[in-house]
View 1 (cartoon, rainbow, N blue to C red):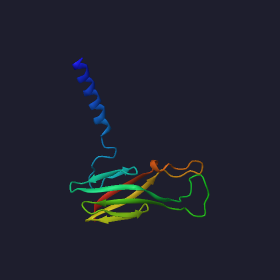
View 2: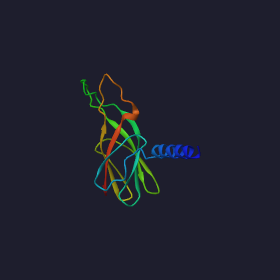
View 3: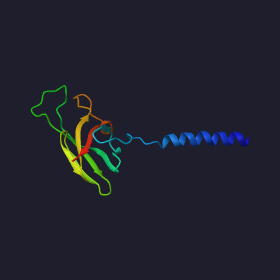
View 4: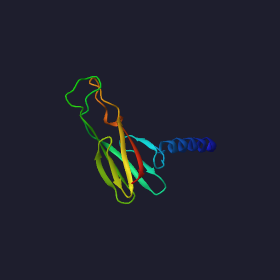
Amino acid sequence: MTRSILRMGVVLLTFAACDDAPSGPSDVGLGEEVQLAPGESVLVGNDGLRVSFRGITEDSRCPADALCVSVGQVVADLEAGRRTKVARMLRPGEALRVEGRRIDLVRVEPYPCSDAPIDPASYRATVVVSRD
């Protein structure tokens, strides 16, 4: 009986440990692309720089299956820093500069379609960090 309870405890602890695994990407090096979901962050390089994707603040891009007068834009809310965090709203092709590093927003996915709104949790921001 005692062994059964002990085994059950080990099994439960194993499942609990799996739940605590980080949901975001692991650490990346300078110059590597990394894709982040809203609320995820990543440590870049070995100097403790953390980059976070906080979410999308605007997505007015013309749907892929529509004709529009304007192409629109998508704006991502990024935050980066070691001790002091700097937050900026960026469009793809723009960069955030902080603590001698340049964080480029490469792209935001998915691209909108007219028949299906994008769930905010489905967005992904691809960034690259390099020396400034």
